[in-house]
Every structure is written in C-alpha cells, then in structure tokens.
Image 1 (cartoon, rainbow, N blue to C red):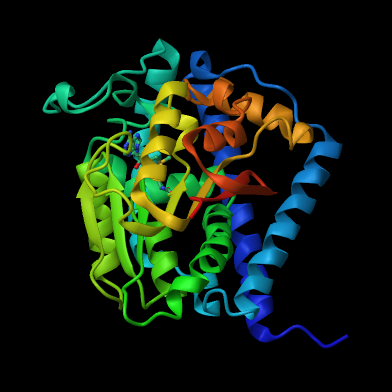
Image 2 (cartoon, helix red, strand yellow):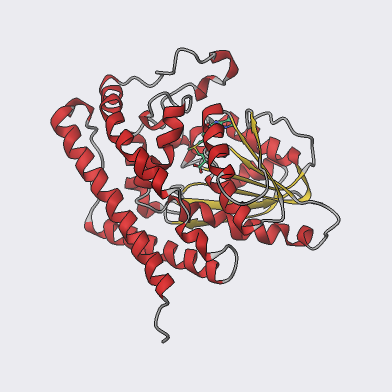
Length: 353
Ligand SMILES: C[S@@+](CC[C@H](N)C(=O)[O-])C[C@H]1O[C@@H](n2cnc3c(N)ncnc32)[C@H](O)[C@@H]1O
C-alpha cells in the first residue's frame, strides 16, 4: 500500500483538529452553562459508547469520500482546506460573548426576539424566530458574522465536508450542458446563507454563472464579502423568499439548497419544492441537502431527538419524518435518489424533459 501523501495527512489532521476543537468548545460551554445558567440546561438522551463509535465511523467515512472526490477532480484539493481562518479566529470570541444571551433565551423559552428595526411584514411568520437560539435570528450582521463558526462547532468541524456532498451529483447532472459552449450554464443556490456552498460550487465549476438567494440581507452581505474576497466571477445575490422566487420559469440548469428544509414548516417545504421545479429547465438537476432522517438513519435517532430538544428548531421533528421523496414526486420531479453522509442527507432529482 502506498504511503499517504503529506496533503492527505494534513487534511486528516485538520479534520481531527476541528473535531476536537468542536467537542472541547461544546464540553466547556455546557459546563459553564451548568454553573452560570443551570435553568437553561435541557434534559437530553444519553449518547452511549456504541453510538459514539458509530459517530466516529460515520465521520471517517465522510472524510474518506471527501478526500476521494477531491482526488477524482470533482473539486480542487485546495477546497479541503478552504475557510476564512483569520476571519473566524477574530470572530470566535464573539461566540463566547454571545453565549449568556443564548442561555437567557433558553432559560426563559424566548424564541421570538427579533431586532426592533425589522419590518415583520417583509418575512413569513415562521422565519421570525431565534432558530437554534441564535441572537437576532437570521436578521442581523452580528448573527451573520458568527454563523459559520457556530455551524462548524455544531457539526464538530464537518459542516463544509457535508456541504461538499452536493457537488458530485450536481456536476453529474450538469455534464450534458457543460459540453455546449454556446450557452452559459446557470445554477442557483437557494437559502445560500453566508455563501459557503456557492464558493464550493464556484471552485468545482468555475465556468458556470452562479446565483444565490436568501431571505436575510445580513447573511447575503456576509456572502458577498466572502465571495468577493476570492477569485472567480461575480455571483448574483438576491434577497427573496424561496417559496416565491424572483426568477423566470425554466431559467436554471441546476439548483442546490443546503440546510434549509429542517427550518421550514411542511407547507413551506412543498412550496419551495414546487418553486424549484418551476425554475429548472426540463432536464435540469436539483440537489437538496439537509439533516438525515429517522427512516434511513435510525441509529442516530438520539442525536436527532437531542437536536430539537436542546436547540430551538420548531420544525425539525416534523422534518425528520417527512417523506421528501414523495414531496419531490408531487412537485413533478423524477429520477430521485438519496444518500446519507454523517448528519446530512443529499437528494438528487431531475425535471423530466
Ligand atoms: C441553516 S441556514 C443554511 C444556510 C446555508 N445554506 C448553509 O449551508 O449554511 C438557513 C438559511 O435559510 C434562510 N432561509 C430560511 N427561510 C427562508 C426562506 N423562506 N427563503 C429564503 N431563505 C430562507 C436563512 O436566512 C438562512 O440563511
């Protein structure tokens, strides 16, 4: 067997470092919460040794596929190390400073503390909440600045590896368009947040025209700052509701959507799928990534149950039992497939020609 390259060792070391940092952060913050805000502590299902082993196995398998797909050229290997590290290091203290406010919200079960300057009529009611007890919900620069670090901590450093799982199915779906140089291929990332998936798509498919949509102006500003600090064509970012998107029918060859669906009520989920079907050109591909679900990952049930017990995730419990294959079919999609990678399930669906 050939010795692993230095780059591979560096990648695994980085991932292990991020996992340890995530675990250490959670351990310490839970200890502090128990001391300073014991009423904020929520009872949760115990995670036994067998489950811990299963989590480790699942993370290792995610790392293997992440490395393998980079080797195959689905995306450049540099992607495996991509993050605004300096920016994150500067913002990390803010995560700690924000914590007492989060505890207070958990303690008082306050879930609708939205900044006063927000015009509530501009947003659907389900959006005006402190998802995962986030200060200001998705509606401030402060929230947008610390979001990426919080997600990396939540997933023990695997968030970007999980997001990258949309790239292979997206590239396969776009292959037939990419050979036709007379027409620009257009891809939209729905609920793009701070733009991490957009950046990944841009590095895997530099020749395409990229669009991003989100309901949060603050998150889009963060995405714009991040994307414009890098090489690559301009990405067109638009503020809008994924249930009613401001684009023409049949105008995209590819669509992606990462970590949105568990934060939507059922009817909104269906509305977004119907919109995705409308926006795609016949033959186009939609790649959806979100939390794993009970049906195909029963061994991780305690983790899924804890997620909505510990964090404010009002639609998660319904999401993990929602039959999204059926919903995709109801919207008109065909050739639907799905696969799970650690905590993320990825669906691929096509609009029939
Ligand atoms: C959990 S974050 C995921 C962000 C990003 N895709 C990622 O991978 O980190 C959910 C995002 O969905 C956005 N969002 C929620 N409801 C939305 C809606 N109805 N229309 C558009 N964006 C929405 C939020 O503003 C937020 O940026």
